[in-house]
Image (tube, rainbow, N blue to C red):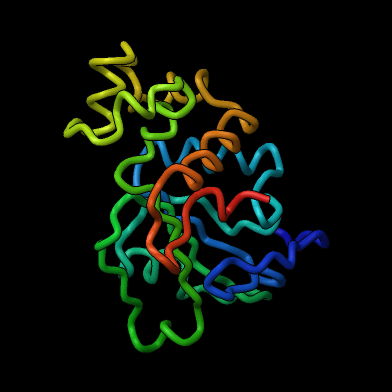
Length: 185
């Protein structure tokens, strides 16, 4: 993609500044990718859509290296990961580690918790032992909560932004961890 002039100088809590960087966005699953797509299309993220190299479902460092990092870019590239696992290992090889910053945004325990928040069911779900996706299916009658067509109909940029910010307010996010709300302008 071509470079756009409107790069955002937003700095995330970990000190990374996106100004000048063009992200490769790695999404863990369908829900994460739909969320990123919707927010990108609405120009709601901390960087403009025109600066994004690609949005991919590739998650392994070696796959991202093979598919994206062996190319010559005319601008600095970073890797933005949107995932629910706090423990998923991602280590670039020595040739790439110093050249391509990696910033992770965690939606722990699952991104489906945003639907629980949107439906006003946080208190009913929180503290229980049910996975958010199971709660959505069983308690909220959202049987297709993991399907792309359902998610694209269910979410818009405003509702996603509100749910992500409320998630940040309600959740006990470990110090230094970034969540989806930190990726939103």
